[in-house]
Image (tube, rainbow, N blue to C red; front, side, top):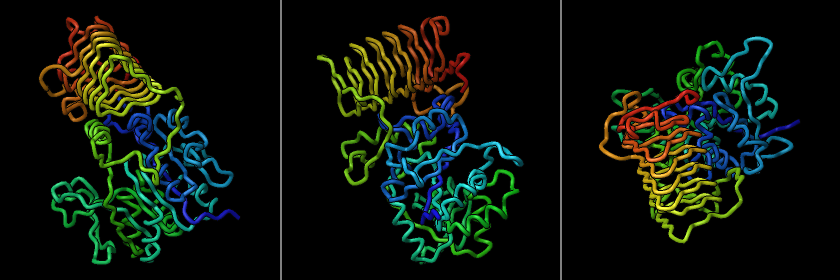
Length: 424
């Protein structure tokens, strides 16, 4: 009989709507990050570095690129005969067939998968955070305390605590109470959405609460375990952890990678981040190119100047072009004589010659100011921006655009230009 001590269930079905056009055609965990990676590479790499060799990846929204990226798990050494990585989309069952309706519902619908490994512990992870964590150390903490549920938690500034689920613990880190986004927080320990459950405890809670609409860990499963007086503990984590849930936090996390002493180091020998890489050609820097304080992906050709930017794989940057404080994703082409400031350009974008992005004053975005802000210019994947166009700040372009879509070659700050075929 197969028996795994602990298996991981990685929730990767989220749309990530606060990333705007970046996630209109791709699930958030599959969004490119740090030049050559995708967001899901970080929790997957944490698993293999922590000795967790069985991972179920629960996909739902726009799963194609995610499924292709994960494949059979070779880059993470997760191509195993027993265990390994398994992609678990919602599937047709004889009765009660439906999409995943909540974080815990996705786990509930895969009880048979988990049971097949006869595990003692289940590790629940989210597919959209950037961090390094040794889950084995968390499991040791769980066992030492005789916990049935352990929640990873990190201290946050008290003034920010109202944005999180907050855990109130005694001096031994046993959880005595928790509050979801409290107005007046009684603690600054925020739940990170990383849980270890005894399988017996989790299974009982899932079966008991299965009928709850939108079955969720924070709202239903953990409160149920608490009511049953199961011992719940908070495992305090003090390393780097970033929820890249908004365009600005996504941009910030990429920019932090190129600090002289980065908070998050991609180059540590003992904690490697693995990814699926298809491009094997080297980078090429032309004779007049300048690159300062930037990450440049494989197969990229730079003939212009790049400052303080994260450039993906297979990108081309033309002569006389200047790119500053920007994220350029894989296979994007930027023509000659362009200026790009604080741009986030998705994959396979074509910026024609003499285009200027991020010019002028900041104006609030007309359609989605909560998404497009902080002076960023966001271009959705496979978009085309025609020659000589000037684009302002807090703006967004998605689709194959032509000169006729612009007002005398301009898109003012705060404007949204989304063409047919590009749905945000």
